[in-house]
Image (cartoon, rainbow, N blue to C red; front, side, top):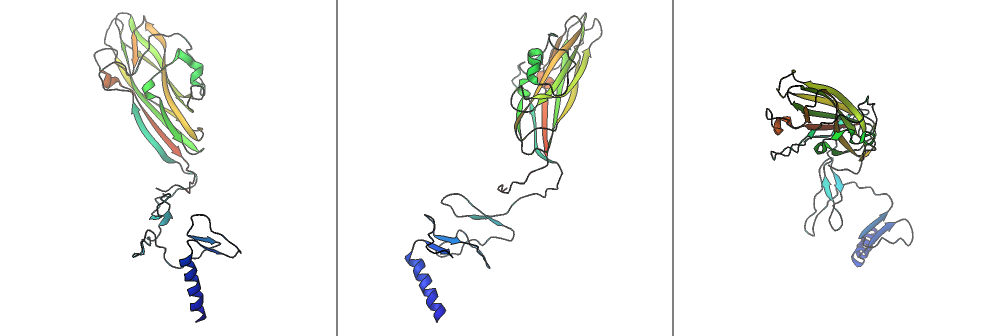
Length: 282
């Protein structure tokens, strides 16, 4: 009978007050807008129902689910966390994307044409900045892309593929060129050389066969910090054999191939040893 009396008093207080506070402290006042405030540990021995009404209990959730806030004015909801198993010191593919600078409008604005050999012809060292090379190199602007790194433990693989094409005749027999892959930061002063290849493209003396080659170049950047970064591809003509044949990269130099065949492409793969973010729910 005594317990029933205490229960009656508690229920009466709940009905008479818009706010209920439970605390071992004297004069404890719940925060503004709070219906029930508990100051201290709470042990729940049975189910929690959310989203109910005056006539229904609501959703008790399922095994393994957690309560997730839906924001101001909305009740929480049960969610199943989709968190993969992450092994320590293992690298996982976090970002993967491929790009091309081909605009599909049948014009010749894809790729680059390089007819000058002026400027710095190397040798080029790993880690030199894009800014230090200035206009000596010509950027394939459609392949400059931004990506994000989330962990200091990372490996970024960059794959560049293009068609190089020359045209001419008589003594216009060939050209040497280099293409570099730069990565890091968002400016030419932070993007540094990560990989470079030198190639020679030539035709027989007196011929006018307009030869072309397709080549693939791979670079690795494994020291990028957390944040946004850009990748850039830039090329330079380093020598001409004979007089001065027209040299194009990622663009047709003659009618024996078209712009679609000659287009360049880039693939960026970011592998990381993931850090744990407890506030992310998939």
